[in-house]
Image 1 (tube, rainbow, N blue to C red):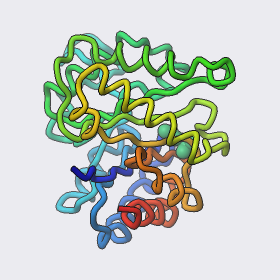
Image 2 (cartoon, rainbow, N blue to C red):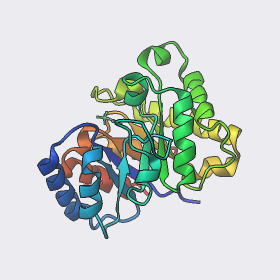
Image 3 (cartoon, rainbow, N blue to C red):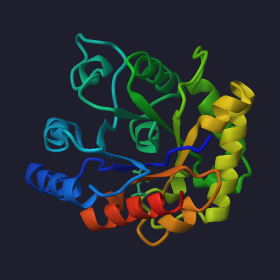
Length: 253
Ligand code: PEP
């Protein structure tokens, strides 16, 4: 079965309210005619309401960059998955900046993944190796550990489940993985999903590549058989480049 590509923009902690609203409005226009690809933006949490309002009635989904697993309570500064259910469509879980800047553990990604699946939102589960792990030949071990830990006690994955393969050394550095390296690693991820669940689940799983993806390299990355989408940071902050990336993703399927 063909997998619908998914391109998402991770705005990280960028853009004030006015430029965020301008970008959302521009994307509402520029992405309108693109078919055959799921598209989403993940603005900073304060602008989620603006995104939901501006993009209402469009095919552009809204995602958040992080959630907490408890539904409510004395957790200052956190936003719960329960609060976001019905407001957003997608949730990035386990982004490398959460893992490496904020010390998020594999156990935490598992708790987040469970609650997001239970509440019917679409997780984008981010995994990826550090440069020294790749250079030390440990990429597969790291990805296996991150994936199996995230999947702990989760008996099945919904169709179209999204994994974002994001080599940490390629994020925000301008060092994109070559399409060949990205393909090989995404195929390894699919094999780990097959081992943990089954061939059907793996075949339905959508694997994004993320790490300095841009309008110039999107087509060659999307041309790889195991790459089903892109998670885009810097290049998602301009309507023109994000639109070209979505167009490239649509053109490759
Ligand atoms: C990201 O933040 O997930 C990302 C891939 O960033 P960039 O495209 O800027 O490398």
